[in-house]
Length: 391
Image (cartoon, rainbow, N blue to C red):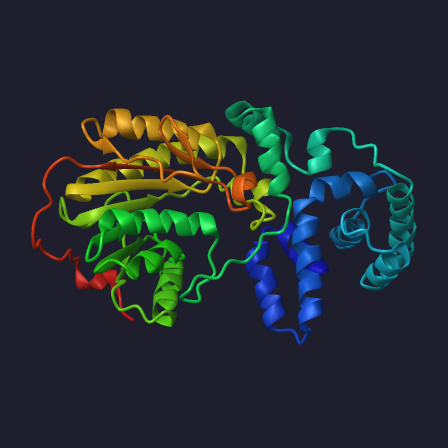
């Protein structure tokens, strides 16, 4: 199964969608499911290191099927430290018959190297299995030591954290939701502008009177609907809407959350193949989109209300630079909301959470409150009926 996930990922499919689908159709027991998950996600995280290790012993062209087998076997040998006899024989058995002799020979050479002492990695980027540009950019943005700590932590498997209501969500995202809930107060009206898959919206809904969940993509919007229904939340209307052209009146919400699309470089432990999909120019493109979303969202905040911006990434362009623009230019005259405190690191513009601080996703958050006295008994925000997804 792990080899099938590796093949699908190389063809452009997302492993976090492929693996659950395959597991759901299988009859594997809990132990085998956990093993398949570790090999699939682990080999994708450590793909560059695995390719370098086995690549020294391959002659000629390696087709996609053999490459997936060698990646799975090398990961088991080099990073899971399984006994060579077990890892090699079990992996080779999954190989197409025409390539079994090659796979067996290559993996046994890998086993010899791994078992003879420290691997002579050619560079830190290969050893940690990240693209060079990503290592260099985070070292520049965070400082070499902090970047190395974040990248090392994101090579560890992600732990599942269950909320009291049964929703699985990383603590970093929960803490963003709790900040939004605290700013809205009991009975508040909240807009989650880019809501899918709905984790933050459904968390805030336990406290707020109304949480409107906006989402541009119909398929992703249906995920929010399903999550709200499963949690039996009747106060989370899901609205098909473009965050750049939101269909609500000025001043409609007590809190607007812009949990913006980003490069996702703070959640690489739970999105193992994302490090290979993101390109350097994606960061600056997304930073421009984030500013446009904030500019569209700001007018929707009521007097005395708050605008919250969050992203699950660590690049300066998408975090501190956007925060500085938001507080200094977009929201001039608004009051910056103080950092929630440890484990968040209060920075000049907002709060930063590094993965190594508490073993969570990497996250950035900044919030500001609009001047003025909140209106009493304002109208409930509404949108045309055809935009709203029914439960």
